[in-house]
Image (tube, rainbow, N blue to C red; front, side, top):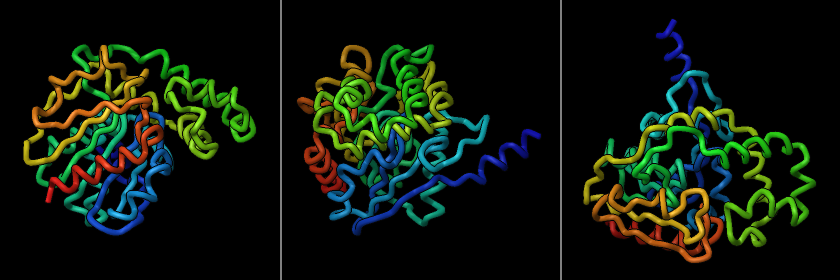
Length: 273
């Protein structure tokens, strides 16, 4: 029975989208998000890279198989498997939040496949791992699920956008309707949300990434999801990593500082040549 369950899990490929031209760049979204989170910068990245965005299990258009491992290391293996199926062996890598942690696990596990790494507000850089789900994120999931049907109309109003996004972005007033709607529908439909949360409990990123991989770590100066006081521990990052703080930026730097994020991804890629 256990063997059959593992086989069933392996049958679920990750949903992906490919666009642009150039060296491969893989984008990994965060907890309760989806590949749609990259829309604000994708068209810019397409000009320099062959961009591959993925939906993690139970997120976006990728199904969740009950009982499948959802810790960051296992998710890294899922991404590697999907990329191998696509014939993509070496690539640049960028991830946000949980996706940043998954990206770091990938660079540690199979560094020979990673050309460069840009981690945007990565999770896992905390000295004291969480032993329970963070109440704020549980509330966000609850609100999204119970308001999803109303979201297409409600998000036209500033009060609704403030409720949903003021804790995520200091520039929430500037976020497009499409960005807000995509994010709301993503978290509302994320069956893998709580399994992925549980997969992070009692864990942190503390693995080795070789200096041969250019690494850039970016946080926003107003990140309320992973605040500097508890979740941005430099001692856990690679010694050679470039550590940047963007001003007027929250937990999704690709929303608040899109041009700066694209610039840093390109700079990291240049260092790999």
